Amino acid sequence: MSATAPDRPEPAPQRVALATIAREWGRIGCIGFGGPPAHIALLRRLCVDDRAWMSEPDFEDGIAACNLLPGPASTQLAIFCAWRLRGPAGAVLGGLCFIVPGLIVILGLASVFLAARPPGWIEGLAEGAGAAVPAVAVAAAAGLLPGSWRRAGPRRAARIRWGGYLLVGGLASATIGPWLVLVLASCGLIEVALTARPPADRALAVWPWPALGLDGLRRGGLRMGIIATAGPAAAGLVALAWEAFKVGALSYGGGFVIIPLMQHDAVTTYHWMTATQFLGAVALGQVTPGPVVLTVAVVGYAAAGIGGGLLAVAVAFAPSFVFVLGGGRYFDRLRANPRVQAFLAGAGPASIGAIAGAALPLGLALAHLWQLGVLALAAAWLLALRRGVVGAIVGGAVLGVVAFLAGAPLAA
Image (cartoon, rainbow, N blue to C red; front, side, top):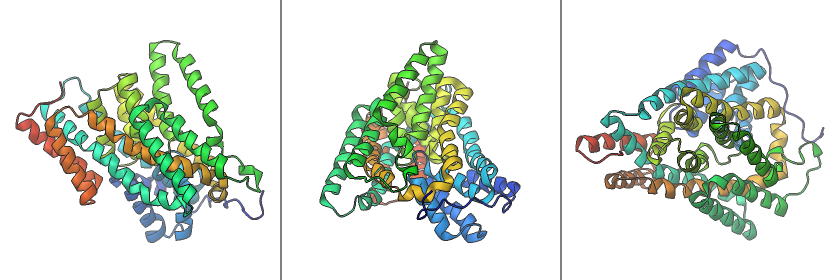
């Protein structure tokens, strides 16, 4: 153990009652509309401002460390804060209470939106909301660009590589969706090879996730393929679990990375849903409370009903619990690890490019001329006026209902 990078102290297990954690984290799970920025603000107000359970530096360190991890960062922050207050039991309880309210809402909505014959106004609502999604992807990528650019630093070579990773991620997302995880990992590993120096403390000399490497990912995909030969039902569930695992353990750049990671497989490879339904699934993830990654529940529902939705959510969020419970005490050292920083310097811009690149296939999925008008209005709302995502999605949904009432064509 390094003397210069001590482990984070163990959380005080009796500091906050489990009932209090259940109540407060459940409340945030119910009112947490607006994605990660809203979740972070609510957690900060609760843990730092109102209750003084955590200091501002401790909370900021938690944000920084969670942003270094793959998967949904705001969910990991919610789990981390609960871990700091009541240990493993608090982490599990707080994380579940943060996730479950949104899960209930989104599964209920999925059962309506994915019904065999939904009412016409529901179809209009879904197609209007979905038409705003390509603009949401572009806006999400644009919001991530400044921080990623600053991380690249002032050196010209680093900035050139940053631009290359961004471009590669965008092209991969728009053209070879099923292989996107390999592209993101490759960008991170290239940056590690070019820039990282081994740390003095060998305990974290190699970060376990990028160390998996391309060969490990290929072996994992091969094993999934072998298991899939067991039968159609097993193949479907294994494929669904793999899609959810990619989102929860192999994605970088926040919840929006779910769009390019899942779109091609959900629509084209496995035919779980149509392109229009996938747009609606992404929209549901934006307007419901809780983590944006709950979109996986809609994809899981389309693949295998309620059981598929629950399986997808369990697999997608399990890594977040494992990362915090198993590595929370090492978060300080994780932030200081040069290999981690180098990997994120490569995978980060590639993920941002992937989010932006997803706008192309999402836009091509729009089937009607009136949806292009909704898309243009959503783009103006998000990019020109710099207003919120929820407003864009809800506004698109309202316009979709208006289009239905006016007799505009809808998906067959």
